[in-house]
Length: 372
Image: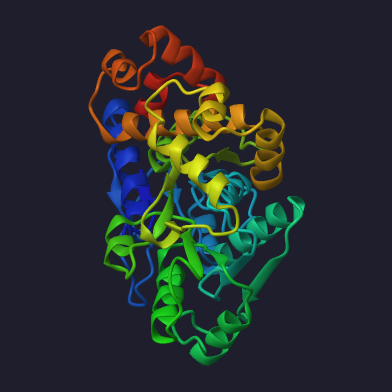
């Protein structure tokens, strides 16, 4: 089996690692494809394999793979009109909704999206974010660079001028850590405070890139292991004569890894912000709405109205969401058993944790840990 997936970032490396795990179980032999003189990933001329797992990025690679006449699965959907191969990729709409939810929870009401011409995916993710923002009743200010200009030859003056004209405080979504870092650098050069004036969220996580940025960048953790496994499973079926699915298999992202770039201290509604912080800090406890009412001495009607206006959901829904997100983070970032996790997060039992987790995410904690 051939792999034509770039491994210069954590997204590609994690997907390839997941494919390798499946390959060991299936008894496959993997070929990490070499590069040609133009530094493009290519199948060797005399290679005679059974299938390929790829990240299609341009027409040249598409034509190269088509000539090989082997079953293939794409893990990126950067070439959406190519339908003769299987496709498994991140759900851009789910990513956009997760980004908006994270930013709204921090009290932000102004939104923007930075989409330099670094690939079709940049504009696709920006468009998805713009759509969920506008569907929620807000405006999204879009900076989309003209096609043909290199993503790393951007007109800094134009981007800086765009930044200066944005309402403050504003949240900016960028497709991945590279354009997000560019925005952070421009803010630093133009003495714009991050995150209090401009909050920045990257649509993909690369721990190294996000942590070397100043400030460190918040980002969305994608389910790369799930994508790799599902792509390998689909390729297995195609090699056994299965039909190419008409629609791509879309995988929701896992969670937002908050770092300094979205650590916003809202002054628009300080009392509500205190409540949100209280819920976050006590996500390991079994909080309920009554605990919030008692702690802050507000009426239930006031609480319901403010949460629905600010977050688009009830206080009870928000408490449950924050608690489940906290459980998910511990699940991925520790080796605790489900029983130990239930004890640490103050559930009455591991059964109770599993039931609530399954209702919220659609799968058990054990299944999600295996995927991630």
